Image 1 (cartoon, rainbow, N blue to C red):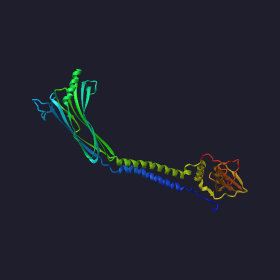
Image 2 (cartoon, helix red, strand yellow):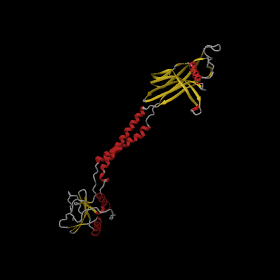
Image 3 (tube, helix red, strand yellow):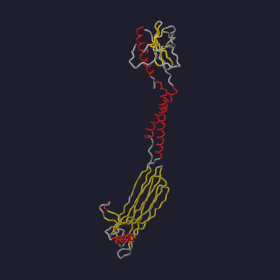
Image 4 (tube, rainbow, N blue to C red):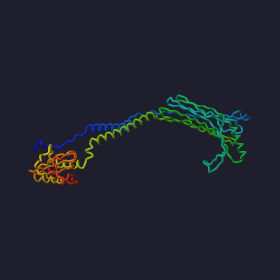
Length: 381
């Protein structure tokens, strides 16, 4: 064999590095962003310091009597039960104290309402009691304000006209003449709100004083939360971390798409192979030892060209006459495999020769070039 006319080395396809290198870089950058998203922001980000606040409440009541020979204008401070017919009014001192861990703007609103109601025992109602008549009296109009600091104290004092409420209840019961139960409830409501480090907070507290209006001797039932403690976690840093994570995710997905697109385009010929390319690759893979890739087509002038039907026919001839198989590429869609013996040239054409390509060795129109069906190739060497 003449090395000047042939080469036994398999041609290597030049990979478009201009697409492979950026594709790999894009995928590496996407991997770093995914790692940063799933590890950095969730493991080493410092925990934000919470905003804490405490609330303390108290209610002090004082019953005032009409002048009598048994009492002065008020019962003894040690008394816990009171006479309804002697009671003129009740003073209530509500205390609300807010203490926060940081200075911030605090908005507040408070009000007090007295509710007089007549009830009737009814097993069909919730709790076994049904409201028959209800009337509300505004003791403190809704009052709003704001302050800047870390503390707030509210100490409104109200006067509850107990005798007026009892008289109104007695008049209603006399007019209805029904077995009703009278009750008075005074409700003091405080609503505090603010915002610390982007985290809004609200606190609502309700204190109540309840007593009967149809008993000769009554007691005051006071209900309130004495102390309360809460924590508010800042959302500003968390919002920033969420924003970074969101953009990292979007950028990582974009880089994956770009990197994958570059690699697919770079290896498109290896990924999207035609039947001709797959068959040619298989022939070279199994029979590379007996195929010589010709740098130029051998001279066939004056020789008899015999087209063969399959590559197996050339393999049989190669074994019989011990002649090498020459491979000559015809454009990008066809390859001719040739064995020469004396004045006869045996040719097998793999693929399809396009109209703008001229075959180095013309073949008869009766034997059109084609790709044989998939079958086991004979392995030699």
